[in-house]
Length: 414
Ligand SMILES: CC(C)(COP(=O)(O)OP(=O)(O)OC[C@H]1O[C@@H](n2cnc3c(N)ncnc32)[C@H](O)[C@@H]1OP(=O)(O)O)[C@@H](O)C(=O)NCCC(=O)NCCS
Image (tube, rainbow, N blue to C red; front, side, top):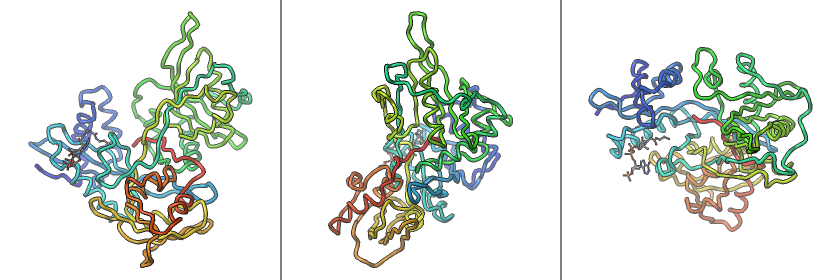
């Protein structure tokens, strides 16, 4: 078997074919050319790995540079460039021979050498990535909004604030609206060019699947909200109401957020609105006359995170309250990149994290720290991953410091 790295552009089509075959697709699918296009237009050989056997690629892995929103001062946020793992497959004929372990070890080493403080991914299955040091750090939620129940509706949006939009106009507006919205919550991952062209089938990208209706919200300062929905169940003349699914809900202001919910509640002949990739602390429930009209139907981990450089990662974000805590970090995963003792000192708008010989207040595993990094989980709750309080009170102090006003959320697959 031959390890292939870098993977040349000449091999990129075969690489996508291997990926498609293992992830429940096929190179003979109608959308295969689109998948090839998605990957190969921006191909970076040094960020792709593969294995070849008998002339055929049997394993794939790639990484991309993506900006991750992290907690900032006073409820604001900052951004941190991260190593985003994607395209991970090992053919069923070659599983459990250590191919993933070798490729991911290589890719994490490359990220560390590049200077990335954090690595991120979305896991197809929970048990795969813990052994490589990743931990779930942001959760998504699915809701059903029973919009026609008594007291479920919101006051109508002001006339003129919402309009349907499509094509090139949408392509010009969408990236800026999303960029303004994604810095409102830790956990968001950016959508670099040509993400929106692919999404909206512009610039020669082929459309895929049933296209949604796009609704734009405009406030006093211009476009500040985007909504996309499509019908999943028709209404009937018996009186049974239909169902729609929301495939994008991006709000950069409170007004856009409220008005888009009001719009969803007012779609005629629709009684159920399904939403995915929403936050666990969905604020709309506090505006509804009957919050039981909004049912949380499921939650799922939608961003895993691994710390590669503890001082860089911990000083890149800020903390809810000033404080000092010395962390003894143990990184049991391949590479052990995060191991060390570090003093985290948080002031108002800034934090420092530096190696220290001082006695530790907390002994934590890298994975426990990674799970809590975006503020979505408390160290106390991540204790099964390895958290020991060495100075009384240090765990409560750290939990308050790491907490964030909003639950982290990622709305972007990669
Ligand atoms: C997940 C996948 C990439 C693993 O590749 P692999 O080359 O078989 O992994 P390795 O041989 O390096 O396995 C390393 C260890 O992880 C374990 N492991 C790997 N995948 C696992 C899974 N899905 N569930 C539980 N354990 C898993 C292996 O048992 C092995 O453990 P061991 O060392 O104790 O024996 C492969 O099974 C696959 O392609 N699955 C389908 C596509 C997919 O889910 N991709 C991930 C997209 S995010």
